[in-house]
View (tube, one colour):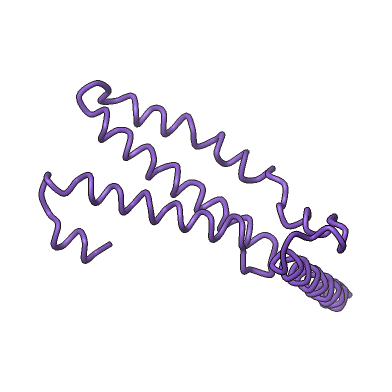
Length: 143
């Protein structure tokens, strides 16, 4: 992005830069919201929330540029009004990976679904061992 902003300075490149920003935000959102690589649940939720806000900001920036002549201050107000909704939706959204646990093994459509289920089971086992370890450490420090 820095290289793009360095070499594409000027109003004729605004839509190209905005398209790159929105495209990158969509990729980051899907990467962190649907395929989280973090084992800590709170960190995964935090990154999902941050990427949701990033995508919301990029979309509102794009729409404000498109409607520049029509709406000048409305896009900033819409952005501010949308932030609480984005936060609430990100925090209460159901974990999509749980669906992989509920699928019968005989009903998988592809090998990737089996891999997702195995990865999620391993992640759950890791979370369980980490939480047991944290409880033991907390008991040691509490006594």
